[in-house]
Image 1 (tube, helix red, strand yellow):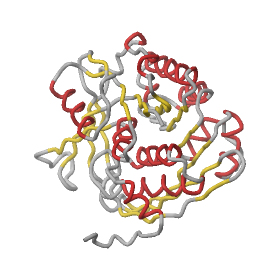
Image 2: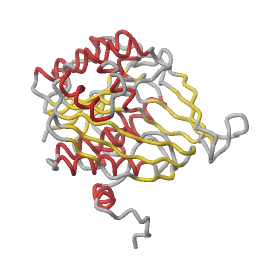
Image 3: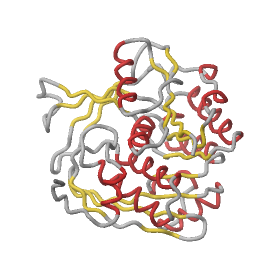
Length: 329
């Protein structure tokens, strides 16, 4: 298996300590992350060769972000340097019935100002077998949408597998623009994941459809090898149940359901994407693929920060039924 390339925006995240609110905190904890960066870190942590592509300015904060990726073994050699700023966001942890709260400050970030000529995809994809992106990246600017389209076309020309996490963000663009852009990109994808709402936006809404109906139309419309939908019910800011369904064009595969007490709400979907890619590239059975992906995302919710730092053995232990949380001695 060759390297797995991911492309998107990495940002600096600032969070108040514990459950402090923005208005009362005197200090912030710093994390670095972004959807595709989180996937790259998790895959590297699983032992896969992963490479992350973005554009970052020539300053110390950008270098901190790169160093964070390198710490976990992510290849950063194809990161383009230039532009003026690193995207920033603030995240206030939720507690009980008070939800988590996010404030973004990412306008005019280096990647949002990137140009198509910044990225030589033929060179970037040398030795690569898989390309992953999310619906966040083409939303950053019209040019980023074109860059993402360039990337998926180049990947398919090289015979690579392409995956997408739909990841609709209403603060970046409206539903109509998302649907139009993601449908064009999905023509070049082999694997797709997202929520029921995101999948409906991609395929066009059907009247009263169930999850399996949407998955079936999703695979048929775009010729996907795999499509998955994550199903969750949130009860409080810290309590959620989590399961997923996989469809391969023939059969449906349901994972077990996890009742999760959340330590950090950021990155669960990214952990699912990384775990899904790991399981597919490791040639797991279809049932094992969806079980591994769901277990990996479940474990992410137990740790602070943006990326899942679980090991393969930890995920396999949970997917095989040990969810006791018993101390490992």
